[in-house]
Length: 447
Image 1 (cartoon, rainbow, N blue to C red):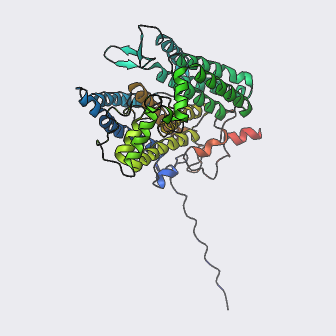
Image 2: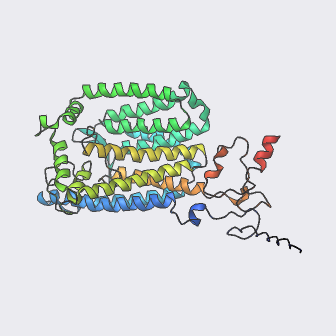
Image 3: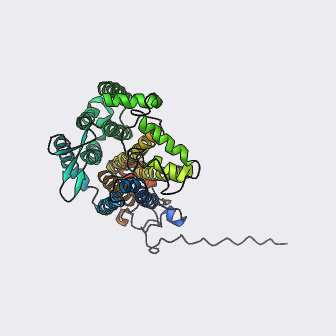
């Protein structure tokens, strides 16, 4: 009795790329094949949602006070709408700018920002509001806040400078130039005075240096010195000392120093779980100071309740996580540090504002990103989002010429010697082919 051998299966043809069977064609990114949204898509969607929601809440928080004061109830909302439109133009510009050109613009940007920080302190040039000289009046345009421009300028400069020679960051001497420039900017901002923004600059720069490879011991010493300097500055300025005492015990002076903290807590407590209704809040009408700017989260809590506050926190969380996801997928040191700085800026400002409103830290005057009223802040943040989207798109659009002729679909050249991407090639959003790593980079290593 004879046994017939099983018939061998025919080999299946290799899957073709989206452009055909030619060697070097790349398949679609894995996230597109699975239908999962990209980090850039999530970032854009949630930022636009926050900006739109912010317009509604600025109108709700400011209309009552303006109406009772015989003013235009739409005044702040209309101005915020103009700021949002200008910010969207800045966003479009940032998505199209050549990221390599930013390295050449970083130096001039820092110089201009430093000059503006000096000019804002000159009497007659800087505008003084509520005891602080933070704004420069520009005809037709409105008010410009140089400290907001200093944030983005410093991020651009640190990312470009560190990327030129990242090995120096491992030494204390290599870290000092960045810390000294940051300290100079912080000193000018403290003279306005604005301790919250000055602290924010240090947080962002320290995060960028840590990602670049700076030693935690060096940065830890800087943090300790900065903490001691902050305590000295708080003790030296009466208004800062009052804010700290109000944070520790607001009910010791409920009619003056602790008034804003107490009214914010009253607004949050009055809202309960679902809120009293959009537009029906009472604290914003002469009870809660800065209800449409620094304290807008308290207005949200009163009118939309705990659910509204949690929704804002969740949206901000998605924005920050998407920004850091873009940083993880950046294709070189420059764009990676740039994305880390921008993501840290958004996240740190959000944490600062939320903690201040909830009474978890002293009030610093930092606005809630994308939601609070303020032109300079909104425009700079939307420009930052545009840069993040630009970085994310550039990381997933590697030219086809990098593929090896005749290679299987999805197979790209290995990294060249000295390439900053190194072993991060698998993070660019494309599936690696079976021949990856056998390109020129591997051959060069064997030589």
